[in-house]
Length: 210
Image (cartoon, rainbow, N blue to C red; front, top):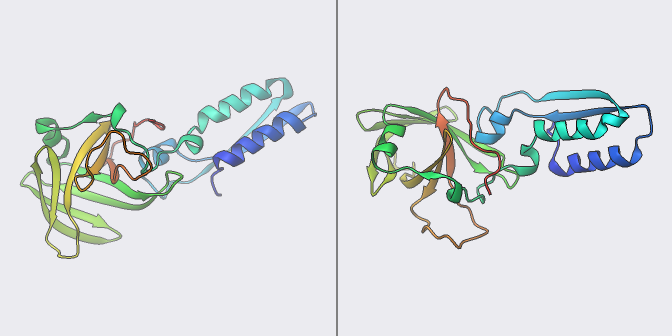
C-alpha cells in the first residue's frame, strides 16, 4: 500500500471534520516506520495500516493521535533541508571515532518528498581501508581525514570519491561535499549528499530540522 501523502492526509482530515454525521467515526490511515523515513534506511520495511473506530466527539483527539503517529509525511527531510544550524559538526578525534572500525548504512539521492532512492553500506577498517557495497557491487578503497573532513578514495577508476564535512544529529550522520562551499545564506540547492547510521543502530534523528 502506498503511504498517505501530506496533502492526502490534510484532505482526509478536512473531509472528516466537515462530512461526518454518524455516531462514530472510522479512520483508516496508512503509515510507515518512522525509523525508515527518518534515516532513509530499511527500504524493505513493510507499511502498516492503522484503523481507529472512535465516538464522534473524540474525532479531534483521534486526528491529533494520527498526526503524532505519522509526522514524517508532512515534514520529511530532503537534500534541500539544511540541518547544519541544528547539528554538531564532527572534527578531529570525534570524527575519527565515529567511523574507525565501524560499518555505516546509508542512503542518498533523496526525492523532494524526502524519500531515498539509493542505499549503501560502507565498512571503515581500522587500517584505513574501506569496503563500499551498493546493489551487490563491492568496491574497496581508502578512507582518511583531511582538514577535518572524511575523505574517500576508491580503487576503481569509475568510483567517484571525495571529501565531506560530517554533521551529526542524534546518531545520524549527514555528509556535505567539499565541492560545495559552506555558505550560510544559500537557499534552494542540495545541501547534504548522504546520511547514514552505524549499522545495527536504530536512527534517532529528528524528523524535521528546519
